[in-house]
Amino acid sequence: MNGKAMVAKWLHLEELGGDPWVLPIWTVVSAAVAAGKVPAISKELSEMGVHVSTRFNVIPRIINRLNDEISDIYKTARTHKPGHVFTEKSKGKALRVDNDLKYHIIADIDAFLFEVNACAELMHRFFQLLHGHAGSPVADADLTKKISGALKKHGVAADWFCMLDRNRNFATHKGTPYLSIDVTNDGAYELLIMKENLTRFDESKKYFRYSELVAIAKGFSAAKEALQKCLIDLFK
Image (cartoon, rainbow, N blue to C red; front, side, top):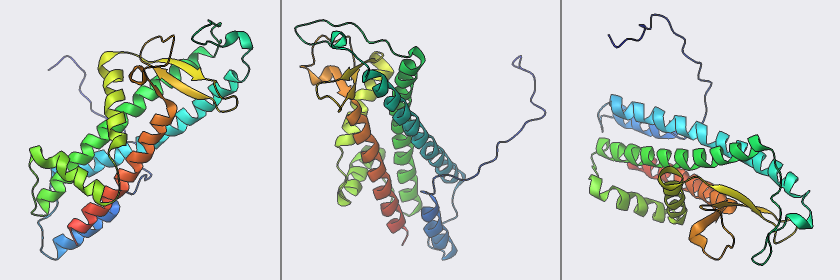
């Protein structure tokens, strides 16, 4: 006994359905199984499909939450006075914003980077397991190259993953973001995620823009669609 009370009764939560990404893949795999081309789906493969699907259900909810939060903080930013503006030559006064909103944004940026990275890793494993199941195993050392080739075949560049990897590494291992808002172009504000408290923005490695998170989301979505096509074709 580990000191914890034994669980004798519990509730499972109803699954009402979500992202259908894996379903067309299971359809062609099941047809291949029925035709005797491949063995029945293993427990590990089946569970990996559930893990990937669950991440797919989480990510858009984080994105929707972030979009709402960013919209709210931009509304506050539009109330700023000239005295709030910082430049390389002048120091303004920090704009007061809702503290909960600010920290919710930081938390959701971290959550977005973590979840997309975690899902990408699960998709790598799912891709590898399905290739093995189809009789075309991919060694660990060749997996990244194989997936990059599959994405390239469908016109999906890898720049979004480079942005994800760079910024996720900072948020996970090196520090906590600071937030500021670019008001250079009135009416076209953009959240800046700083890796330190900056007094100038002449080194791009020290911060990233909200538009980069949008680019990561779009790149991830394109990669998701491309990999689905590749995995369906694998069993045709």
